[in-house]
Image 1 (cartoon, rainbow, N blue to C red):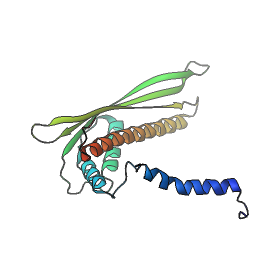
Image 2 (image 1 turned 60 degrees about the horizontal axis):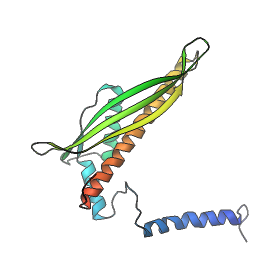
Image 3 (image 1 turned 120 degrees about the vertical axis):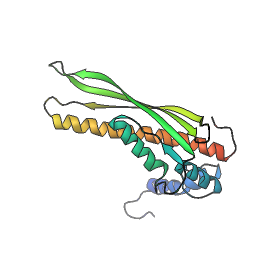
Image 4 (image 1 turned 60 degrees about the vertical axis):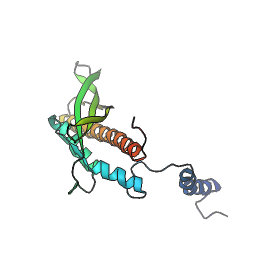
Length: 186
């Protein structure tokens, strides 16, 4: 008999939720950003912490740079010497999607693009990886509520920056994991 408030279905879901991690580890799955663990994980973490990020222009670029620094070395770079140089170009594309009855824009869609290049810092520096990440989001512009429009735009910008930094971090992690395994990076 199930405890009060529980059903057979919820008991099965709980068992599946508890057993799922055991099943996926058996087939070689592991968290991409796992800190610690195997020697390979330690090597990937050390490589990520050794990435220096070049300056990115504009306010949004500075926010992206700060977010990348926090993601690559959550505890700070400390005394880790830079072995890699990440250079990021950042830009926005804006598309008006709606108009109010007075002809003013009422909805805006923004496409953020980050083209990145990873160099080793040895003489001479050579490009070892590159990528282009893209994120889309939109926000509404209320007719007479200017503060609400500014708040919506700032929220959308933060979400785009977070998404782009996450994509770049994932691609760098995959590159360093492949390098740690001795596979030719893609």
